Amino acid sequence: MTEAPLPSLLDLTPFNSAYQMNPHAVLDDLRNRCPAHRDAVSGSLLLTRYADVREIVNNRAMWRDPMQAEEGALMQRRFLERAPEGVPRTHISSILTLDDPDHARIRQPLAQALYARVAKFRPEVERLVDETLDELAGETAFDLMERFCVPIPIDAIARILGVDRNRLAQFRTWSEGVIQSLNPVRTPEQTKTMEAAATALNAYFTELMAERRRSPRDDLITDMVQLQAEGALLDDDELRINLQALLVGGNLTTTDLIGNTVRNLLLNPSELAKLRADPGIISAVVEEALRFEPPVDITGRIAPGDITAGGCPMHQGQSVTVSLRAANRDPEVFDDPHSFDVSRTHKPHVAFGGGAHICIGAPLARLEISVALVKLFDRFPTLRLADPDAAPSWRTLPFFRGMEHLQVQTQALA
Image 1: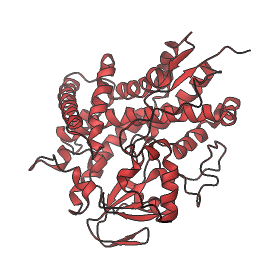
Image 2 (image 1 turned 90 degrees about the vertical axis):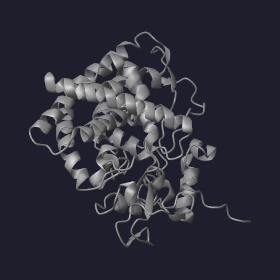
Image 3 (image 1 turned 30 degrees about the vertical axis):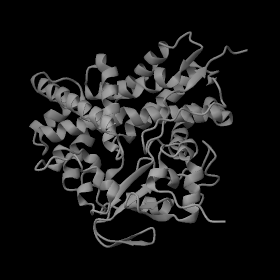
C-alpha cells in the first residue's frame, strides 16, 4: 500500500479538518516519518522534534525578519507583499519580527516597563476576575468563552496600557482584525478588515500618546513616553506599533489559553480534583496546560548562514518553521505526552518560544490564567461542560488554537 504523502504546512492548519479536530494524529505521524521535512508548499524546513525545535528557538543568531528570507521561502515572503517601499522596518513591524540591533533596542525598554507593571498587577487581576464572575452570579448555563475567557485578558491589558475600558468590545474587534497580519493565506476581505483595524488603532494610539505627554497617568503608555523623554532610543512609530502589538497579543492568545485549559480540566476530573484539593499547585497546572494545549502552533526563523537544522544543511536566507505543538508532545521528552497530567515532572515546554524572541507577554499570561482558574473553580465548584461529547468549536485562524464557544453548566451541590 502506498504511504500517504507528507503534509504541507497548510495541512497543519484548520483548512485541514483532520488537523483541526485532532492535530496530534497528524503531527505524530509527521514526527515519526519525517521529523525534518522540506515543505515545497511553504518553502520552509518543517521541524517537529522537541530537541530540534528547542535548538532553533533558543539560537539567538537565527533571523526573524521576513526581509532576510530568500525568494524560495514562499510563506515568509507572503508577509512582505504589502510592505510599503522606503519605510523603515521598525515602523511597520513590531518586535515580533525584528532582528537585532533594532529588536533589542525596542524590546528592552518595553520589557522593563511592562514587567515592572506585571510585578504589582496581581491585586488588579484579582479584582477584574471577581468583577467578571460577579456578573455570572445566579446563572446556571453560559458560554464561558464569551462571558469569562474573552473579557478578562482584554480588560487586563487595557488596564495595564491605560486605554479606555469603555471601548473594550471595540479593542477586541480591532484585535481580531489586526491578528490577520499573521495569517499568510488571508482572503482579500480579511486583508481589508486588517487594514481598517490597523488604521483605527494607529489613530487611537497616536491620540493617546499625545494625551499622556500632556497629562501623565499611572499606566504603561505614560511609562513609555516618559522613557522616550529620558532618552530611550525609540521613536513614536516604533512605540505605537509595539503598544498595539501588546494590545492584540495580550488578549487573543490568553483568551485561547484560558478556554483550552478550563476545557481540559473539565475533561480530566482527576486533574481538576488535584487543583481543588491544593490551589497551591496552580503554577504546575498552568505549565502543563501550556504544554498540552498551547494557543500558538508554530514560529519561524531564517538561517543567517550555513547551518544545520534537524540534521539538514541550510544556507543563508532559508526558512525554518518549528511546530511548538508537536515539540510539546514529543514522546522522547514527555512520558505519555497525550495525557493531561498536572503532577507531571516539570520539563520546559516551548509554548512561548524561546531565546531573544520568547513571548514578551508570558509573565502576564501566566498571572491572568493562574488567578482566573483558581477563582473560577472556587466560585463554581460544580462547573461542567454542557455536553462533554460535543466537538469543540475551534477557531479557524491558521496557526492558532482556541475555541469560539465553550458552553458550560453549573449545578447545586448535593
